Image 1 (cartoon, rainbow, N blue to C red):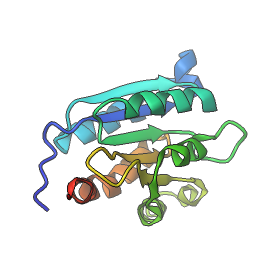
Image 2 (cartoon, rainbow, N blue to C red):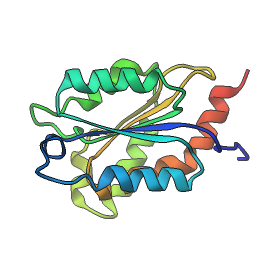
Image 3 (cartoon, helix red, strand yellow):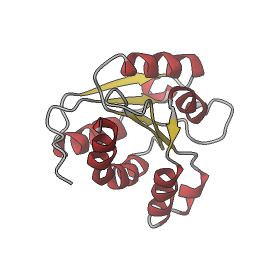
Image 4 (spheres, rainbow, N blue to C red):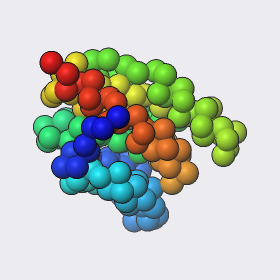
Amino acid sequence: MSYDLTGTGARIIVVNDRVISGERSDKAGPAARARIEEAGLSPVDLAVVAEDAGQVRTALAAALETPARLVLVLGGTGFNRRDRVPEEVRAVIEVELPGIAEQIRAHGLENTPLSSLSREVVGVTSRDAHGALVVASPGSRGGASDTLDVVVPLLPHVLAQLDEE
């Protein structure tokens, strides 16, 4: 695929209470940013929000107001009380792409048996050139890396399909 990602914006939303409180440093967000920039996307903005459905919803809405064509949400894909990212992502996508989420989990299983506990959600916000690919990914550095191993090679194909007249 010869789709040029140069100048294609991306937004990373890190969902992590411990990063917000300063208890832990964010390793996954900067690593994901570097990986996305290596793929040619720019600018790649990064935001950190608490594990709160309202904050996630607000961050997603803000990301979709930008020209970003990739929105990567790191964290909140488990199943405890505060893990609401999959539900919030489903609320902003028009077309879910479950095969990509399945591929991410399968790839993750090569590295950890915990991969199957994640509830990745992947989809596009519209079926045209205004659409963005939105991905809910585990918040660990390894989970984000597994996600990008799958998503980065597919991104040119997804965007080319969205840009078709």
